[in-house]
Amino acid sequence: MDAGDITVIRQAAGMQALSRGWHSEGLAVGLVPTMGALHKGHLDLVVEARRQCDRVVVSIFVNPTQFGPSEDFSRYPRDLEGDLAKLADIGVDAVFFPNPGEMYPSGFQTRVELTRLPAHLCGLTRLNHFAGVAQVVLKLFNICKPDVAVFGQKDFQQVRVIEQMVADLNLDIRIVRHPIVREPDGLAMSSRNVYLTREQREAATVINRTLVDSEAWIREGEHQPAAIVKRAGQQIREAGGEVEYFNVCDPVTLDDLNRIGAESTQVLLVTAVRFGATRLIDNRLVDCVWAPQPM
Image (cartoon, rainbow, N blue to C red; front, side, top):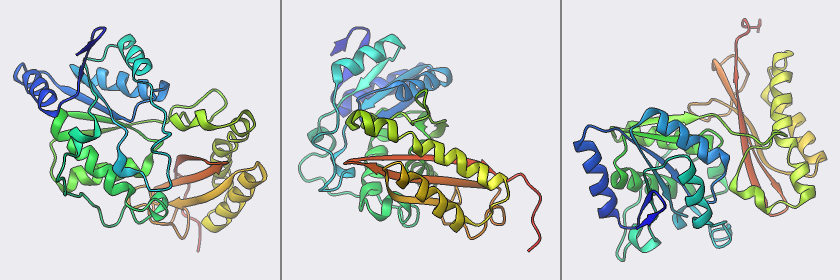
């Protein structure tokens, strides 16, 4: 089926055939996996995929296996018509838009799990979330057959899970991280931002502001993660946010750091915050460029 100049494919076999055809012509294929409700952050990923590849596929699939029983699967925003209009404007070659039965047919029983990376951050409260992410992304890789896949760095743990899966399973796919895309006031773009009331939306700007402030505290000489976590949590709570976590960790292993600058050349400041029922995530990478401090 076609929507304007975009080919929309609903069957895995059709998507595989299209990608094989492109590869037979010597063309590089890029993939941007999404759950739809596209915003500028997603579109920037598509632009990056277009910059690196000859053909670009965007998958749109709200994956049920990565939602917990009390999470927002049923109310996750869906707008296929609007998504296709946005994608047509920036030159996407195909959209893979399967239904759940196509991705998880009767009798489906295979799981993809990582042992260590999910045992941090979001994985501590969103049980089985990253198993669902790894499962669906591996399926999308096998269906769309990309040479390059582009992911936003806002979901930092998700990117690390995918990078680790690709390395562990020797997948011949290059993962490209794209920097976080933000609103003019600093809030990270997210499909879930539409759930915020006007007051919550204004208050949510404290998340990025706190990440920026935390980097400043580090550069001013605060090298104790516990002090950063305490100060950041207080700042977010004073603005009305409920802090699920605010961590100072290694950006590769996601392990909490004991001292900033002593264990890693980079520090990941990462947080999940709720405003009402809406859960938002954000992060900031900080380079440790100062000379070692005396112990």
